[in-house]
Amino acid sequence: MICPEFRRLWQGIERAHSLVLNPHKWLGAQFDCSTHFLRDPDALVRTLAIHPEFLKTHGRDGIVNYSEWSIPLGRRFRALKIWFLLRAYGLERLRGMIRNHVRWSEAMAGRLAATTDFRVTTRPVLSLFSFRHEPGNITDLDEHNRRLIDAINDDGRIYLTQTKVDGRLVIRFQAGSFDTTEADVDEAFDVIVEIAERLVRDTTAAKV
Image 1 (cartoon, helix red, strand yellow):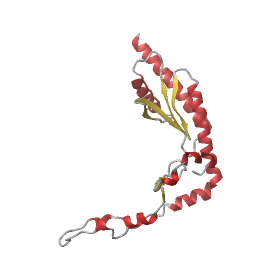
Image 2 (cartoon, one colour; image 1 turned 180 degrees about the vertical axis):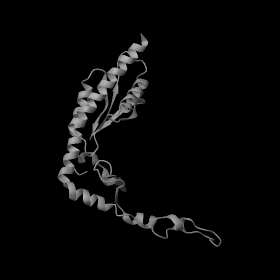
Image 3 (cartoon, one colour; image 1 turned 120 degrees about the vertical axis):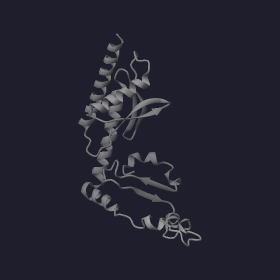
Image 4 (cartoon, one colour; image 1 turned 90 degrees about the horizontal axis):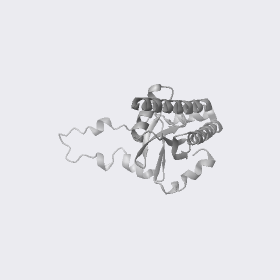
């Protein structure tokens, strides 16, 4: 959203009634910090006003209405986190971080796609893509990739998560940490390939 060259991904957003973003993720704001954009703020006010219809208790004599005890009618000053973030880094440094993450992820996807037995299953969208390890001597590739991601995470140098694409288990990669460097992404590539090759060797040896 803050990088003009990526706003093509927002095509059609003008038809949305509301939009929530989490600066505590990619922008590096302290947790928790979310932004909420509304086409019609009055609709939200009518819903969350102090005395909306759904909070009224009919025939309330003798009834303890616990909703009056716990619904917060105030909010913490979360917007201050965004102010500090912008004052400390500025838009250009934040844009530079995002652009680096996108570029490094695209390069990472290209390196994996060119490496034997690896297949990129979803091309990078911003800094996120998925891949799969498909050695020819493994029959159950879902189980193999499940073991691969477990081995990568147990190793401790990097941490990845899984998802499914077309019903098949794949591994997700994203450069998104505020302090990620290009060297970190290079190391991630080395770790993935190293552990995948070791897993294949161990599996082959177990079959012999």
